[in-house]
Image (tube, rainbow, N blue to C red):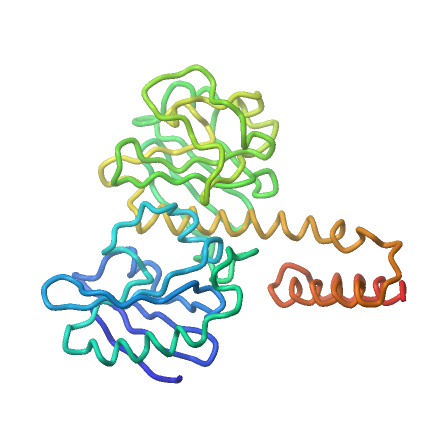
Length: 322
């Protein structure tokens, strides 16, 4: 399309295969938008497009992302308020006809799998390194590992005894984020192998979910209390979690952080699974099957989940089976 649609707090630039969302900077712009700055959303990441009446003489154009396509949406797990939804473009009501035109144009470009969950993230996550200040410690992520450094003024005795923590993303299976705007907000890592572990004795908090869009496993052994089978029921007792408070862990800092960690965890898991997935069925000689596996390998390569060398090596192995 190559056109631009300017709304309140954001501008959408329509390209042939994606929408570039640029967020304004200003005192009235939600801080989450200012933190994100801009996002490119491929048409393949969208499931539908809606146009509805807004408040006080406005209309709202919304691109609905496919489940599993955006790490930010997955980490948020439905907790974002409408005003902080990066997929909403609020426009004056007199621009409704123009908004309807772009809505129809976007609908016409939705992919054949629009109604299905995405198999991988299609929207880029916020980039590391990043950090934020929680109530009981400082969280940092360098792209490879998450670290928690406790504050003596806020950290529990359990966390002080466990000491400062470092969690390689290779030892995690996900992240759980509970909005700081809710009661007892936190960011909690889930070690690999403990996705379904029942939290240990404790009170005062709803146990962490065993599954869900934003869930990832915590690190493995050699990290204090997290090496045991049961997870602490309370986030303030869990060395794999930081808790939020008034002014600590705000949405615009903690949510992009959670999304970046979640994307890195999923990417590492996918890369680790590539050799097994490619070599499975190595004894097959069906050319059609091999061609399909090469096509799948090419998709992983284009998505950045397989390096150039890995792609060349695995493709040569598959071709050798013909």
